[in-house]
Structure formats: structure tokens, C-alpha cells
Image (cartoon, rainbow, N blue to C red):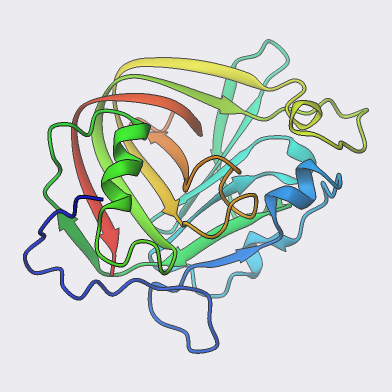
Length: 233
């Protein structure tokens, strides 16, 4: 695979879960497959118990798949679906997640992004081309003008107490199409954590927070107009 030469970024200081903690260590609680396949919808982590919230970034669903959680630079956004299918976004750490991936990132490396990076597929291809990207998970963030994006908020009906498949887990989910919006995106890349904190067919898990803080959700697709990209050191 073609490698991009990134001056000043060698060696890249990626981080992973390990006994020796680093500033940008990627951590996780629970696993996506336990939620989707085993029906373990209960919270495995209460966000208020994360002691260090300085420069904290993270994402996951709310327990019992009742919404989405995105933490961006120490601010925790929670999105839920109203009875009329509109979205409501609030800010709180008093929330639990059945699986959650997170990292405290104080130092970011800015990357020069090729013009070919216009959507999630080309973004994943670019991130996969980075030196050592297949070794350890890392966080990335994006500031962008978004031409169009499809984000969803999980909204499992309260009477459903267990699920055993992806389709069952996404009952009640509501998708929102946003156009011509300025947004911040936080994502995690890993070649080795399919069905843990990324889906089985991708190395990415990405959430979006509109810069006006009125919309937030899991990114299913996106088309970028302009973007700035950083990866965790």
C-alpha cells in the first residue's frame, strides 16, 4: 500500500491500552459485540467515574441503546430522540454506556490531507496508509465544513429488554441528514478492534458534533467540503 511521507511525524507516537499508561492511551470499556450479539445493554462504565476529564475524547451509545455519547475536549454531549423524532442534545457526564472508547489527548499532530479525502472511505484509506497505523489504536479529530452527512441516534424502544443482532439493536434508530454544516468529528482508528469499538467491517468509529452544538450522532456517511485533520500523539 502506498505510504504518504509526513515530515515531522516520524516516529508517530500512537498509544494503546497497556499496563504503561501514556497521555493519549486509548482505553475502552465493554464491547460492541457483547451489546449486539449477547444483548448486554447495561452500562459497563459511568462517565462520571473517569477521573481525568482534561482533554478527554470518547464515544459510544447510552446504556440500553437510548441515545449517543460524544466527549470532545472534556465536554460530554448526549443526544436522545424525542417522541416526535426530533433530536435533543444536552451536556452531562452523568450517563452510562454499554461500550465506550476514550483517550485523554493533550497533543495532536496536524496532517496535510490529500484532496482525495472526501468521505469516510477515503479517510479510512488515508489513515491506513500512515506509518505504524496497523500496530496500535489511535484517536483522530476533524474540523470540517460538511457538505452532507448522515448521522444516527440509537433509540431502542423501552419495552425491548434484550437484542441478539445488529438489526434488533437498531430498532427505533433515527437518522438525520445534515447539509452545509460546520462540525467537529472525533474518531478512533484500529485495525484490531472490530466489533469491540469499531464495526466488524471498518477500522473507524466516528461521531459528529455540529459546531452550534444542536446536533450530534454516530456518523454513517459524510461528504467533506474542507477539513482539517489531527491524530493523537
